[in-house]
Image (tube, rainbow, N blue to C red):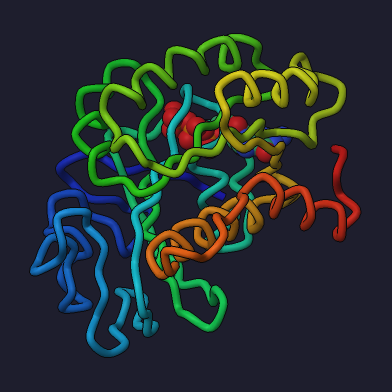
Length: 253
Ligand SMILES: Nc1nc2c(ncn2[C@@H]2O[C@H](COP(=O)(O)OP(=O)(O)OP(=O)(O)O)[C@@H](O)[C@H]2O)c(=O)[nH]1
């Protein structure tokens, strides 16, 4: 499969929904983020709205994929959106790209607008500008690349600097399918996540392991936060993920 990545300023040839040049959400839903929306970017249409994939939704959130170049951000998004794996030669994302997906979460249609950022250092200033609007961040490293794991601390520093304080954050160890080249143990990922107090799991864009779960868990947390009554118990993202993995029998890669 030939691969093309987003080119900042020219829109994406990879995704028909994406164009950083257009107003956010392309205005196709008539409910563009920022247009009459509260300052936190949440959109509560008075009646169900159309996402730009022409699916109705009740509420929408922005999720950003971050992490070193090559960890699999684009592949994770494509797996989630299209159920396919982008095999073959690796073409780095240029700038930023987004795609939408509507999920059914507890009787609500939740639209995730998922931003795929370029991991390369030279695009950092472009991606910084998008952090403050993100409701959730999926921070990826590659279990076959120690440097990408070691860089997680630097990514967290960057996130604390640029993202909203209450952003939903999740650490993902991607490429869990590659047993023979693994250099970061699952336990190491778990330990690091514990130190920083963030939920964690391993994923594989190639096999699909935990991909749907990662996005669903984040969508559940966001939906819970935005609809919960003061007395409602807090949604425990890590507990939810652990329970789901256990029931799917997929705790280990
Ligand atoms: N085996 C395996 N390979 C993967 C997986 N995810 C991504 N890859 C491969 O890793 C390479 C990089 O994937 P991308 O998704 O383009 O990486 P990226 O994080 O978007 O990189 P940048 O756009 O530069 O930030 C590609 O060759 C993919 O085929 C995975 O889960 N398993």
